[in-house]
Amino acid sequence: MTMVTLASGVEIDTSGGLRILELQERYYVVGQDLLIFTNSREEAREEIRKLKGLEC
Image (cartoon, rainbow, N blue to C red; front, side, top):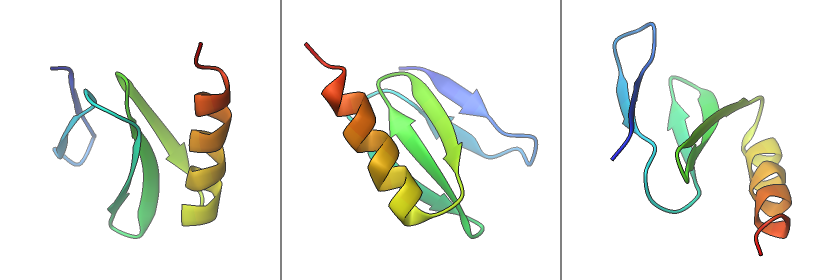
């Protein structure tokens, strides 16, 4: 399990499958030990599509 702590003190578990996390009207792609900030839910969905396209 990999935990990331944001400046606000919020801890996020980045293990597991890719998913969208909404915190305080901000969107993140979380999973596979990644934490990626995006500007919208749609941008987060697109980021997940790109990442899944890289899987072998």
